[in-house]
Length: 194
Image 1 (cartoon, helix red, strand yellow):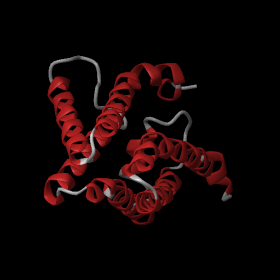
Image 2 (image 1 turned 30 degrees about the vertical axis):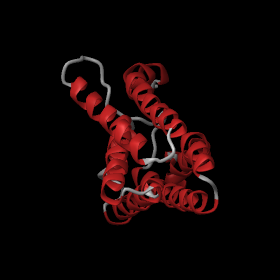
Image 3 (image 1 turned 90 degrees about the vertical axis):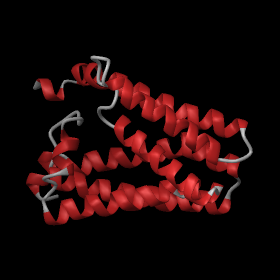
Image 4 (image 1 turned 180 degrees about the horizontal axis):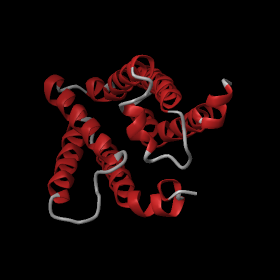
């Protein structure tokens, strides 16, 4: 097994950014649970995310690798929606907007660039060799399903239930879909034409 696909080395390389991502999610959940509206939690967690970006310049460990930088970007989009609309609905729709946007980017990369941009970058975090094109197409489907699920939960359930879903349920859905994406993108399946 090459160093790039060694799980122990991947954990060492990515553990700090994963902890940052989980910590920012927990901060959003806690502040959202303690307030009546979602605007303040969106602004607080976006501020915390910006603090991590600044802190990255002064520490040697990678705080923003992997998905943590994406998490900070989603917090900034959420804060932007909150400031622009001053509305809980806009904060809730961040997941739908971002999931749809990511799905379109991944789909375009997979269809027109064979996964050469996003797929190639995602491959460095994967535990096994994968086909970049299949990975981006699978991630496009994952983004679309996540966007629709967020919209459904935000539309039909209470703020508290949406908060639980976006903090915990969405992670479970993403993990289950990611298992499928990884199986779909495996190199041996891609070469065999499955």
